[in-house]
Amino acid sequence: MTSTPVDAPRLFPDRLVVAVDGTSGSGKSSTCRGVATRLGLRYLDTGAMFRAMTWWMLQHGVDVHDPAAVAARCAEPAIASGTDPSAPTITVDGTDVAVAIRSDEVTAAVSPVSTVPEVRARLLALQRAIIGAEVEPTGIVVEGRDIGSVVVPDAPVKLFLTADAAARASRRAAESGATDVAATEQSLRSRDAIDSGRATAPLLLADGAVQVDTTGYTLEEVVELVVAMVDRVRS
Ligand code: DC
Image (cartoon, rainbow, N blue to C red; front, side, top):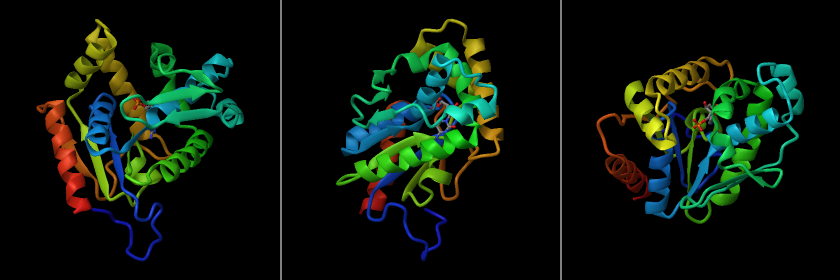
């Protein structure tokens, strides 16, 4: 399931990491939380960390379209993620930003901020520290865009979730209460284009990842599929 050479040192030896990447609105969060809850694993939403970084930049008046300005400040915010799948938390400098990071303003700015290599390097270190600290004794489900390719390339279970853009837009609109589904779809497509086209750690199908199109499936069905994959590597 992984392309890591057999003699390469494992990043997290003897630890179960389930790496879940995919497009915006493909059902990653619900799937990951469902799987982590079912299997008693921890859960890390790395998208929330990029959103928290973006929220801080907006709060401090940093021009999110100026990569040098973002890079110059990205070491400042203290971002902390709680990894309980039934109640994941995210704080910046001690402030709970779980609701604020889902605003349209943050959603519109998060992809440009995520393209800045210094931002990615800082959050990569933070993500690996959390994964290293949280996976014992059970393991952790980690969702994002570059988990199977960059953050934990030797994860024993890797998934890449996709879904039709129209299906993703109606799911997102239902979650957020947005009434303009066409605008939601446009926003998802534009984030996907930036996330897939960036130079550093683009969204792509990682080596060894299993691609799942969730369009015609219920959440329960996708959770069941992933649980079965994890059970196979555990046995
Ligand atoms: O999963 P999400 O939609 O909350 O993620 C928000 C943005 O964060 C997404 O558009 C791209 C960025 N992101 C990233 O670049 N790398 C990750 N591992 C996770 C998210």
